[in-house]
Image (cartoon, rainbow, N blue to C red; front, side, top):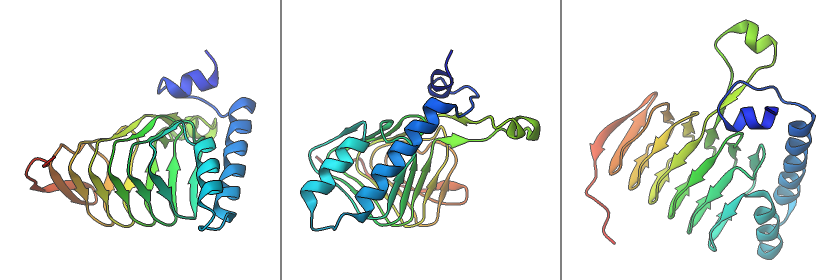
Length: 187
C-alpha cells in the first residue's frame, strides 16, 4: 500500500516524495490565486477550479486561502469563503450547497498520533470532514478530523468542532455543543 493509499484509508502514513510534490504544487497554485486581483474573477475561478476536486457553478474564495492538496476538497453550489481560511484537505473535505464560511476558519482533516514515538517517526493520519447544505460557520471556527456536520446548521464564532453536529442545529463553544434546535429548512 502506498503512503497516499494509507492516507486516504485513514491509516497512519508518512509524507513521501509523491505527497510532498503534490503539496508543493497545490501551495504554488494557492500563492498564484492569492496574488490574483479580486476583480480578475475569470482567472481566479480558473485557478480555483484547478485546485479543487469538485466545485459547483457558483463559488467564491476571498484571499488568502490555503489548501494542502486541493483535489480532496469538494464545494457545492453557492459556496462562499471569506478571508484567511485554511483547508487541510489531506483526506476528503466535502461541503454541500449554500455554505458560508466567515474569516479565519480552519478545516483540518489531518492529525498526529498521541504517541510521541510515532510523531517522531513523522507519522500522520487523516479522516474526512463532511458538511451538509445550508451551513454557516462564524469567524474563527475550527473543524477537526473526522467530523460530520449536518444540514441547516450554524456554528458560532470561535467554536472548535470536535464531534458530529446534527441537522437543524446551532452549535457553539470549545468543544462545540448544540445549544439550540432550528426548524427544518424551508425550500
